[in-house]
Length: 229
Image (cartoon, rainbow, N blue to C red; front, top):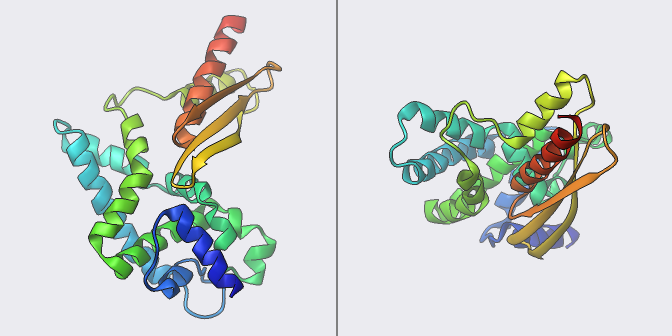
C-alpha cells in the first residue's frame, strides 16, 4: 500500500495517471535492485524523447538548418538537462535502488535520474501511446525550448558567469532553489545565486529551474561587473 501511495504522489507531479502502475514502478527500478529493471524502458524512452524534441524544434524554428536543430536537440536531451527535469519531480525519492546505490547516494546521481526519466517516458508510451507521451514531454520541454537561441556563439548568463569566475581563479557560483509556488504541474521556481567574491545573493523566478538560474546569474554578472569592472 505504501508503494502505491508513493506512485500516486509521483503521478500527480508528472500530471499523468497510469492505467498500469506496474509500468511506472518498473521505470523507477535501477539495475542495482533485484528483479526486472528499467533499462529496456530507458532504451525505448530515449528514442521517443529524441523524436518528440526533434518535432518540437522543427516547428519552433521553421527556418533553422539541420545542423542547428541537431545542436539544440543535443542540448535538450543530454543527461544534465534530463536530470534537472527529474529533480523538479523529485524523481530520486521514488527510485528502487540496490543497497549499494542507496548508501552511495544514487538517488541524487545525474546519470541515474536521467535514465529513470527516459524510462518513465517509455512507460507512458506503453501505457497510453504516443499522444499521451507527447503531451507530457511537451510540458516538460516547452519553456526550455523557448529559452534556446539559434546564435551558435551566444553563451547564456550561467556560462558567462562561470567563465568570469574561472578567469579570476575563483570558486564556481552556487545555485539553490529558494522557493516553489503553484500547482505541481505548473510551478514557479525561485532560485538564488551566490559567489565568493561578494556577500550579496541574487534571486530570480521563472517557470523552470534552468531559466531562473540563468536570470539569477545575469543579475550576479551585473553586480560583479559594476563592482570589479
